[in-house]
Length: 375
Image 1 (cartoon, rainbow, N blue to C red):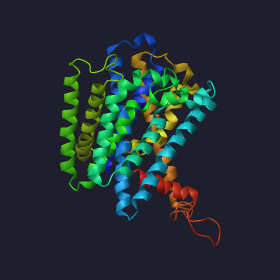
Image 2 (cartoon, one colour; image 1 turned 90 degrees about the vertical axis):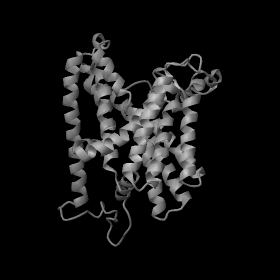
Image 3 (cartoon, rainbow, N blue to C red; image 1 turned 45 degrees about the horizontal axis):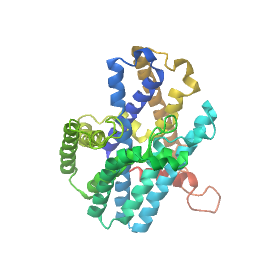
Image 4 (tube, rainbow, N blue to C red; image 1 turned 120 degrees about the horizontal axis):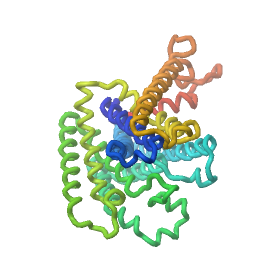
């Protein structure tokens, strides 16, 4: 069963993602010191944590759903592992597409580490953690422990001299390298394991009002504690608050956790159909909009607009992307109804299109698989 408020929150993450990328790509340098731009970029920083956190929640919910359907623990583990590997494959395909469309140094462009790379590997690690656990409480505790460990050792990883001996493409996954790493496993994987911890909790709780009230209290307390700790002396020499600091990590994580019950409450007041549509199509929007914002298609706009003009362009771009989301949904629904509109086509139902044969087509299976894993 889909939880609309999670789609709503994911849709909010999509809007934040579009805002951050568009303003970063199109705002001229002279306006980047203005308070409005600085605030917009600060808000943009919460987008990636939302996506990673919700990916973790989805892993836990999907695993619980599969167990209820009768799958064995090894089968559930392998399904989660395959999903993570699929995301890693998509990450490389995305970089290849960017190189084909906009060029760049090869193979460096293909090896650049972005959010899909980190998400996919983190999902595979989360699948392994889930497999090690022996029940919901054990798994939630393991995910929470992994989250704390990732946050606390990040400053040590960032300053470890021995990591320089690793091949550069490997080191890029561990810690940032200018021009080659947008995201690194430390600390970004911690948002996904935190989502898996809370997703495990959510999957076992029948009363969603109660569990969301607990999430609100937990998120608010975590963010407040992190903010208070930011005034204390740093635990790690050389750690920067806006980069490797565990304090900053837990502030952001607390905010994201608190956003879950916020979305739960707001969807009862305003369902936000457009936000939910964006949320369900988050991967599609990510895939198409990054190249539109940063690639050759928008070269005349790159760092060429005033902040006010960039905001207007952002609004128009968002409406355009929503139109593409609606078009995609329409075409998908039409495909499922079949060419004559008389019900699902044989391919959409997953049946063989060859006479006398049955079974699932690759397209039908992929569609079902994607929907199941998005629950």
